[in-house]
Length: 112
Length: 116
Image 1 (cartoon, each protein chain N blue to C red):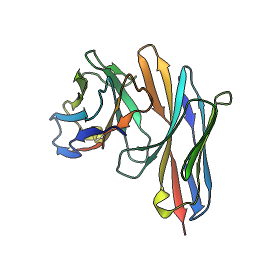
Image 2 (image 1 turned 120 degrees about the vertical axis):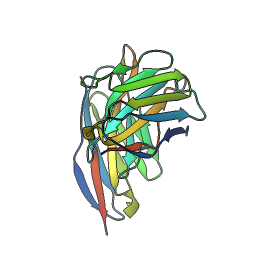
Image 3 (image 1 turned 135 degrees about the vertical axis):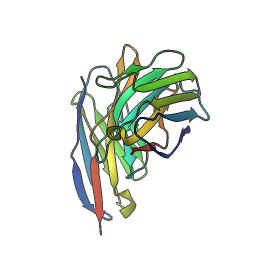
Image 4 (image 1 turned 45 degrees about the vertical axis):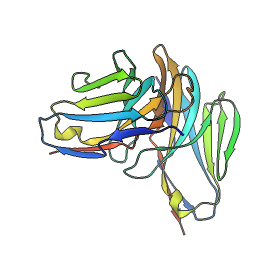
């Protein structure tokens, strides 16, 4: 089966940097995604890693280590609007194609 | 990014009735459509995976006769919640993936279902 762990909640200060970690165990690994979700809305895509290393996209960066089953999402220059749930999702290959399994999400609260 | 249009955004129905949710891929061909359910303060739980033209594959614990999925074309997939009960009240989200691109899956806007 698949298992994805991430912290339930985090709090950070506006303007600061925050790192949200995600660990996973899965077979047939085929990519790791980070999504942002505001309450009552659908998730929005933030980043995608399939090879080891860092992917940078503006204020957001994501890192992947496949050998360690570990990823993190780094948010810089935090803004109040960044308060949301951040979902780590692992894509894995099965006999019937690819599937995407989500972690429980990390609720980030940005304070003044 | 590509767009998946999901309707309705919210629906209230009486217990025992059926509700149909539609997802359309507007600018790509969704060879695979995933259907998720999300309860308050919980993550997305995959209900089923459907490939165009074939029967959906349901996750363990999801009743296929209760949650009917149709994926008859490359741009349209539907989820019908049959004989809905209050415990079916949830946020339902579809996600479409194109076989060729096969990088990210694109989400619909979600449907908030309330069964009274």
